[in-house]
Amino acid sequence: MSTPPLLVIAHGSRDPRHAATVHALTRRVAAARPGLRVDTAFLDFNAPSVPQAVSRLAADGVREAVALPLLLTRAFHAKTDIPAVLRESTAGLPSLRLHTADVLGPSPLLTAALERRLSEAGLRPGDRSSTGVVLASAGSTDPEASAVIAAIAREWRHTGWCAVRPAFASASLPRTEDAVRELRATGARRVAVAPYVIAPGFLPDRIARGAREAGADLLAPVLGAAPEVVSLLLHRYDRALRPAARLLSA
Image (tube, rainbow, N blue to C red; front, side, top):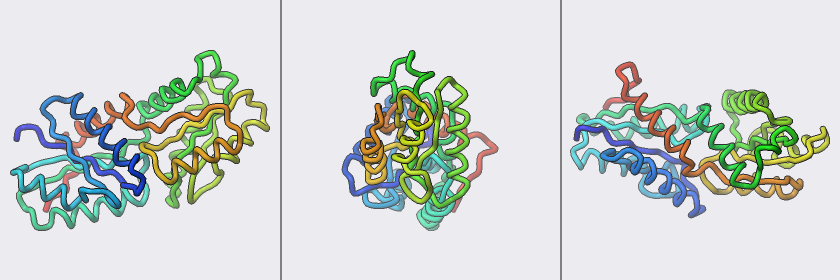
């Protein structure tokens, strides 16, 4: 196989919308790069599991592949869970070499995808200077991940928004509803919530509830299979195959 396959590793969820959204994204990635095999695996709740997907690659005679964490920050899953499950999955497969791609964020492509989703929710270009945006992420106990979200909010603010505030559905504060109320109190004429999440599920639903309860004017859809996310996956795939990329071998 001349082109190493791409194995996209998502978190997984009991919510069927999560897997459906992940599969829609990976189908678009495959369509954007004809000849590239794109497989999907999940850390939990959904099938195939990572060990099942890795075993399938080896059984098909694949000698080299790229494992890409479908994650927006380098938190516990990226630092611990995925490296561990990949080591375990390849331990008995000496003929298969996996390159591990970087997580997706931060990236200007993700900011562009957020703006696309806000536009789809009804935000007009002329509304930008009077709109405060809540950048709502799932949240993490890892301070590095929280700091990255805060940094993205600060940088995004300088592109013409009235204000941008980070918010978190779990682990960290403020919550989405508190950030919406803060923006309203500080004079934002319009408040929009931009979920910084890939797919629907429990925590994205919490973000949506917070937006509704606090009276946000706009709630953008999740990032999902936005064209910018598709491009970013392929960029991470290509970069993982560069000679200097870190390798995970059995």
